[in-house]
Amino acid sequence: MLRPLGRWRAYAWDAGAILLAAADLVLAVGDPQANVPPYAHVMSWVACLGLVFRRRFPRTVLALCVPGLLVGYALVAAEVALYTVSRRRPFSWQVVVGCLAVWASAFVLWPLPTFLNLSLHDVLGRFMYSGLQALAPFALGLLMRTRTELSHRVRELAEGREREKRLHAHAVLAQERARLAREMHDVVSHQVTLIAMQAGALQTCTPDDEAREVARVIRQLSVRTLEELRQMVGVLRVTALDADAASRPGLKDLPELVAHSGVPVELSLGALPEPVPAPLSTAAYRTVQEALTNVRKHAPGAPTSVLLEVREDHLAVEIRNGNPATSASAPAFPSGGHGLVGLRERAELLGGDFQAERTEDGGFRVLARFPLAHTRIPETDQH
Image 1 (cartoon, rainbow, N blue to C red):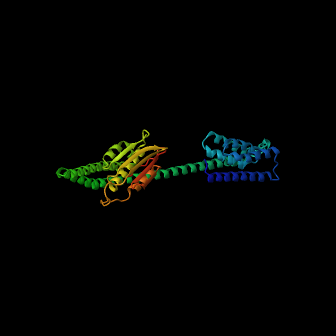
Image 2 (image 1 turned 120 degrees about the vertical axis):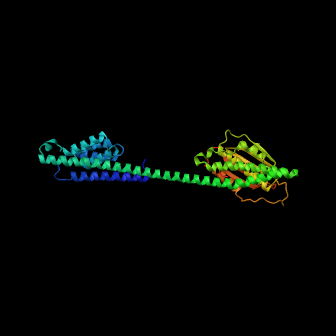
Image 3 (image 1 turned 180 degrees about the vertical axis):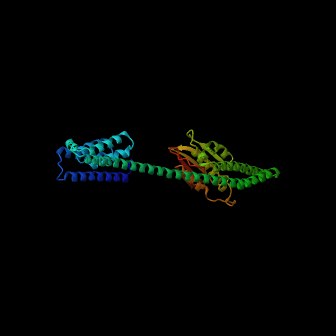
């Protein structure tokens, strides 16, 4: 299908060809020495006007132009029609027949008695000249078709090089991700392992039951952090095409997450569709995980509720917490402020929305909505 610019260009070429053929007829018929019968006028102008349909019916237009050339003066019209057919199918029998028909029509004079009275020299000259008139449009059509095919091949080569560049960029990205995975594993896992070991030693040596319980929780959280770190490293080490195959937490892991969150949580799961798409399941898990982490850091001991349900055509994840149980003088944990931003980006990436606001009772409310239909699947699990 032609684009708008190409369509207007084709119209311009068609108009030029018709005007050229019409000018040739006017010059030929206007010759005072030419004794043109009426039917020659009709056949010549029919051939000229038939060029309007040369792109849609090229062989039919060529068949109309041959009689106009034989009994009249439609030479340019016949050559344009032959060019069109030869460009469509340069090595078909229709082109061979068209070349022979144009050659014969240009070679033979009409009426026949006039042709039979020609000398041998005139006959040989007309033979050569008519052959050139038939071969020229065929050669031009073959040349233009070859040029078009070469343009398509060059375009395909350029597209192939672009694909190769993208694949190379993906390979470089995979190497960089593997390097980051190694660094993350070497730096973070070592520190978390030391924390777990120190907590284990404290749990064994201290006689204080409260301190032993705190040490047990620290050790348990350290082990869970190491497990999630291994999952993140696994995602970073696979390629983008295999990222979905990596192990990811989902809705099925929410009860365990709530049980080990360190805050009093009431989990409520509404009627959820089965199965929930993997990106939505992971996004819901990460939303609850980040919200509970914030509750543990900024409102320790605050009663918290986690609700997952389908509202209209969205999966709604709502986490509410009340006032913290500890005093305001308790030391605050360091925060980079990127947790809620990351949750908002995750929701928008999946086509949903995100809200985080304080409640009237002094608590906090987090609401993420993910569309269940037409979910866009991200390439990687952003944390």
